[in-house]
Image (cartoon, rainbow, N blue to C red; front, side, top):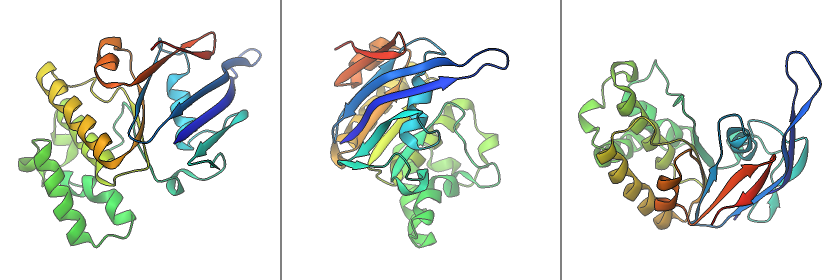
Length: 219
């Protein structure tokens, strides 16, 4: 179980006094569960995701995984996979090695990592692009590469920021099912930021909306 407990975070504008971005925000995500975070741009959704990932520290509050306090554990030691809107793909690597990267970092032999990456690309309809550079792909294709890379390591927790935003309707429906299957099969706790409430209702077991810098449960 992933737990974010009483998270507080202030933001200081270039001119002016600090303002609260998050105030006593709490959410728990069980193994194999998808929880959605809803709210307008600038409400603090992505900041909460970054705190869960360890890319930012909360001013107060605790991040726990399986009951252990990981608030000061660096991102690379949390065993999480994260995907943000800019995809963060490596332009110097081809598509296959982008997907295999996380496995290689986990000391999986490169040949084995590439075999598993090729299988994952096939599941996402990208097998023909394995040797392509990521900058040669469309936005939607790059997004699918980023999704494949996020899933391949079978992380303890999956952190997603608008994962389907660049995809057409048919592919969105296909990947919803693909994600649901992976999350259930590997018991990943999944925290998912989205603006699309209908999509959240199709995938999430629970949803919270950022209101007044805190979280209010929607369902």
